[in-house]
Image (cartoon, rainbow, N blue to C red; front, top):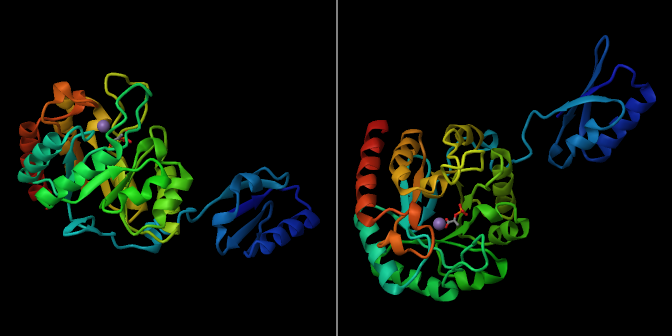
Length: 333
Ligand code: PEP
Ligand code: MN
């Protein structure tokens, strides 16, 4: 971190600031130019509040050389992380498709969808049991019973399951769940992030509706700082002024995150677009752009789905998308 002082800073003020940095365990390299003095801070600057320093009378500006996320940072961990979920691997050249309904609705529904998406090449089964709905009057999910049904589908198909956890107190119910999903609305629920960070389960961390990539990485850092490094990032569209699509899919998040982090990156074209007709092109584009996986909503009867029917593919449509995705994977090798 570099702190540039204003020209009018007195020696006394400068020395006080240096002492203040040193008291925080940092060593300070002072370089005096003709007009300005630059303080180079060496050590763990992650706890230094840049805006506080920048607000000081004698400070012109503050520049960070390394980001405040460490565990998730590619600089300190150049190799791609491969997250293993049973026999399934994501990241570092391993690609996996996650498919299933928005919500678990019945045993027949989840078993049918699970069997079909597996046959089409999905490696992991998704399905919401605890649903974060905008309206309290909408279907809130089957909760514990939904988790039981997912486990039945896992037993029947052998597919590991991915499902959202909204409350750390529910963790005991999720004991047999393979991947804990942190939904977009909870990306900055720091207590929840810390709680799942204390588990050894894979975590699918979705980007918040209005969060930057840096904020997404800082949220991953919360999980990793507790000791759980099995974090998979998921871009699922962000809020923009456009209303035709449910959200706007930020595909540049793939190469941008790739530069910044070693964690696997999954794209969810279903929540990103909100429209079934747009899922295939976005799934193919994401694959071509180097995503490590896709998460796609699939329902056996989208028209009568209790949640997100408009963006859900039928198993037959998913089968076509999956076949095209695999062709793209072959091409980009
Ligand atoms: C979901 O995956 O069902 C979901 C609610 O997604 P998001 O948190 O991205 O809205
Ligand atoms: Mn959904």
